[in-house]
Image (cartoon, rainbow, N blue to C red; front, side, top):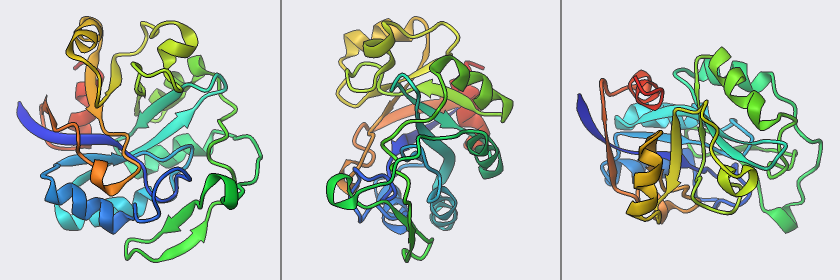
Length: 231
């Protein structure tokens, strides 16, 4: 087993609520500077900056796990993490979303950025609008594509599965806790689930703020997924 420093919930400039300087290069550089070995760029209901982030991460020796933060029909946020970008793309291609247009003056810009930090496009669909997928259907679809579904920030009221549905269903093997979660609450969840503590960062300064370690069987995307599955 190997101990690694991680942050599996980072938003890029594609998410309308994230700062525009949350570019692939800046995220990679900040992650490297803070000693993070494995991260995930998990934008709201979109994956257009993941490949660029992975390219930057490879150059900086930071593993970037392919991921997305999916919002279900019930408004529950679920982290969906995969071993390869192709797996993530296959999963994403099977999902439809509410057809609402973004209004930048209200919700913010949704920037698609290259691995050279060039803005190469803007996502027109409002990414704060959820998927046409119910919470119970997310995990089977994620697993169909070799991934792991992890309810996000379950200790928070906003878009947390406990606040919305009342509890975490037993079919999950791991949950995410926010960086401000107290140890007593974490201990309760640890009795049933594997835990990850993430920053949910929308700003560069918040990346890696949890300063948490995991013990995994190999330093790779596969190693992270194996831990989250409880293997």
